[in-house]
Length: 278
Image (cartoon, rainbow, N blue to C red; front, top):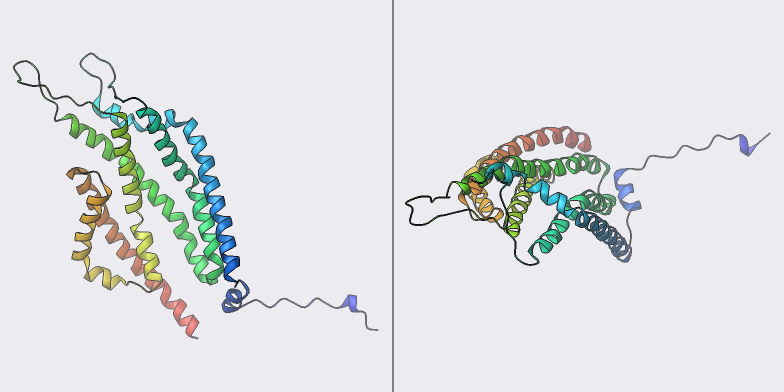
């Protein structure tokens, strides 16, 4: 007796990588619609984070001025150091803080939406290879920002305080009068500059996996990379030589780490190429 309901269901065949790419293909209009939807999600995430950070902007600023307070210390009268501001300057400072904090808070959402948009066009092994970089990128950005907060800013403020002069017999008195907007511009510029610069290992390793650079190429052109590093440090930091030298030194160390990471990526890619060829 032939009973159809007793038949075992046929096992689904596992799709090849090429079949996965073809199955995820879509017309251009669908791609544009999806891009618009993901951009709306990113903008909404930034807007929500902006509103939250605006209400917490005073606390965020109190957190950011700790390096200044620690480095400058109390004045001659024993009071904490003072920051000066012009009319409406502190309001616009709060707005800039909210923008800075909102983008930082919304970054995981932005990175996820970007990944989900490009993921259908990637092979399975490429998606698996991209996942560690999605984790490493915010971690490296946080490391660069932490370096600024705990090391660079106290050092820069002590350096600035060292130029104070005056007293009895002096023809003039030089005193550090820090403005709210100037201090915020300095610390946020340094945090963004160091955070972006710390993405070098991620960028170079991804370029190596794409076949754009090799470890031998990076090692051979090290002298040109050093020149470009100092140019980038001059662009990403305020116009003071101390922060430029520190950032350039960190970038050179990251460049050497990138060369090592690219070598590891090349060794890992060799068995995959042999397997694909077989």
